[in-house]
Length: 205
Image 1 (tube, rainbow, N blue to C red):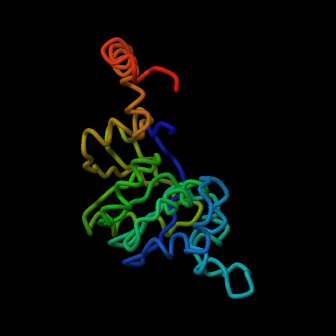
Image 2: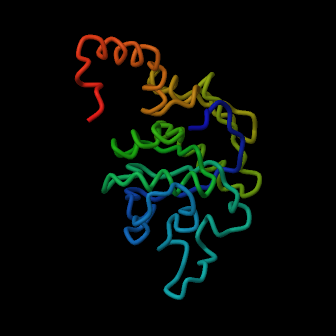
């Protein structure tokens, strides 16, 4: 998993509440277990019409936001089913930070397991960021995880809170597998000890 330290990029505004995981990545795209190639299906039903043509009024189809790295979203983002394909689709599109008033718990946890930083802010601070994000190509934010700050295009700064352990995981690029691999020496030592205590378990059948 890639480390998350500092991110500077265009922020796309999506001021819709209760955007569920089926809106983020519809069920017909869940057949794959690959984490790549899902970006084109991100917000599929909102991005494309029935003929598969882009809807020009959807934010990520507008020229200024096609390369957005940050999503400023409405409350209860990521509700619905627990599909991990939702953060995969966001990452594959290029979005690695989502800022909202709050998130569904499972989606929030899945973000940290996949290198996405979900930031929770108060309604008043969200209103300021939505205003910033409406600036199109000038809607550039800088998110600094170490200092826990968001710097806007006018230089203003917003501080955000984050669980220290989850912050540690993102700063060091650690998912569940990465955490386990940090214990390699102890795991190897335990297995070697078991070979002597219970040699029949290590015997070839």
